[in-house]
Image (cartoon, rainbow, N blue to C red):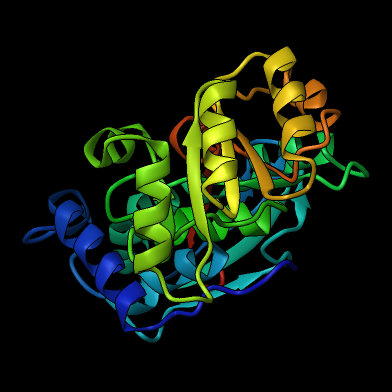
Length: 288
């Protein structure tokens, strides 16, 4: 297991918001067929091969609906699962199991999809010393869950929010009047323990950022040839990060250039949902 998501009040609020979106008043379908509390059990089954992530959130959906609900799993976040594998069992009031099903699966499928894609890309960097980062290109109100999934998959988190660090991008540079002015202003503003990162698009901008004392230089959408020249120019005087159009097909070549980090927005904005299902609903005591 790579880590555990702290199920604090903030997480609960986000889950409750998702439940309210799906069940604003009542679950009409469930209330129509189940007239009273009926103990039941349902299996959680993987329908894909990959990395599971979000089990704590999945289970929390049901306990927020009814604290007597129990979710038991045979795997942990970060484990590899296979298609057809039963990975858990949820027991409780059938109304609760049916009411929470879609919301719980939405969280688990999204987080497992991100963890799986991250694992696949991180595996391509194994042994290179290059660290895989996410970005802030996350689903609104899902950042906490999505960045956790990146860590479970073997990646690292870049800034969690705009309050966490200084990253000067093209519009900051334009507003400041140039790379040097932007970096110098940031260095003067930032506490001494905070690094200043600047995004550059060509070698001239890279040289200017380096001369201005940037701590991290992000090479954004540059050709492999220019990235190699930029790394040679920087010569270890700043950390280097590559961003923009990084794919499974290009990440190998990028990692050979001697950069420190590769950031991939696709980890959170383009990861496909991992296919999971709640199957074999039955009354408590009945065989599956």
